[in-house]
Length: 359
Figure 1: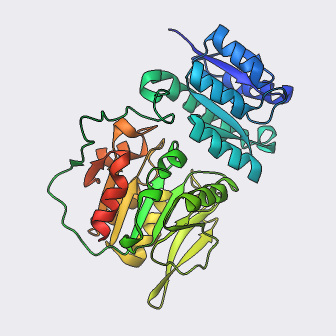
Figure 2: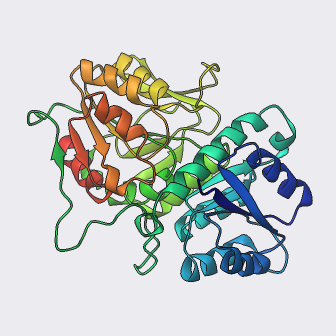
Figure 3: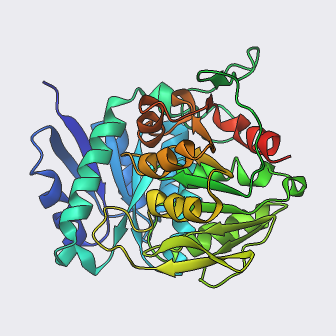
């Protein structure tokens, strides 16, 4: 069996060793080389032809963003960024995702703590997933921007796949969106396309660390007709405002009188993802019953399935992103296979379907 070849790029000897130590525990992965800066990275990508690259952002000689641009242009392949948990690091990571990086892992003191185990599992899982995908399926560097998934051919409009009977419209109180790996890129192709004419609030859970969700909210706000904020808690939930769950905290909905408010909490702690799509959707269902539109998008795992099951049982509507346009068809797959989805929709038509059900 051919092993997955990985190139590690980082100016820190400690970080290179830490990542190597993680990856050497996985028999399917082989670390084929190390680079200390972007210039070395480009040379080694060409000579070693790795299946996956882990790429630091802040490096001497040539930084990670400049190296990424050249790699994606000349030698396109899955690149996972190693990102610092600062505001500047978060903004640079979002830029890297726009340039074509498939995902990122956090780089902080956690590499020397017990939480390194969680990072290790995620990194190995992501490397194995992206290495299995054909480069032509993951990347299309000939298009205007690097895009993800197999692009729908222009001569054939992207199709919506109804699941079961035609869905009847219901009064929608909130739109509830959940996403993970590939979500930042995908949200930028959904939220900015939504018109204020929907006149509904949107709550979003994107699996990300603190600072990253703030930068994501600012980025989406600058691109959108709707107002996009990182939820801080106790905000009155208003129409045409998008509330992004804060990294490291759950986003819940609370009803006080006739109004709904955000609640930001670390509870429950004994859960894989914080923030969690399941926690957010379940709390919303407690307040609005079935008057919700759930949207599950690209991501690993199955977070969102249980919450959306509750929404569907109460009469709500559920949309799942289709496999062809997902960076990772995990969370949508779980919802589709559980027979919760009412429609399976390509990424570029999700905004259209949100508007359809909200108007």
